[in-house]
Length: 213
Image (tube, rainbow, N blue to C red; front, side):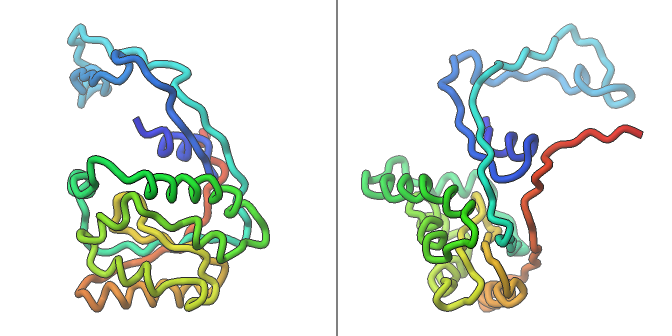
């Protein structure tokens, strides 16, 4: 039930999605033996159980523009935050003010990332969050400090910074000085005894492709 991941993998680029309201039977968990799905020798066993038909037309997607100057720096700490733990620290409810704060920025961010030349102040503020980062900082040593001291005003080339998904990877968007930005974030993690690796990434605009020999 993650159309954001599926659409980005299939279509590539900078993609927004949403799910329609689904029927209870469409969201019910369905399981069949792997031996029914996998080919021999791992599978190929006829259990008589057939894979369920997937629901059709369950959502929509839209590809947004991505300014060509923007690259993504992924800082990957050498530890794991289990998804269950990352979800458990989130509150059961949010204040109206915090929800409005995030919705305003989510509405602006696609336009900001598609504008060339990029506006650092707009992108930085549009990447602010009150829904998950304040709660997940307890799971990621150094996150609070990184989000506080890494700004366009203190780091030339930086556009915005956030926790990537549930973490612990940090995502920084930038137009230049990529190594310098990565080194500063890695140094903060190192002060907490955490080693990291980093990668410089760009959107894969082609999405899934089929190659024929």
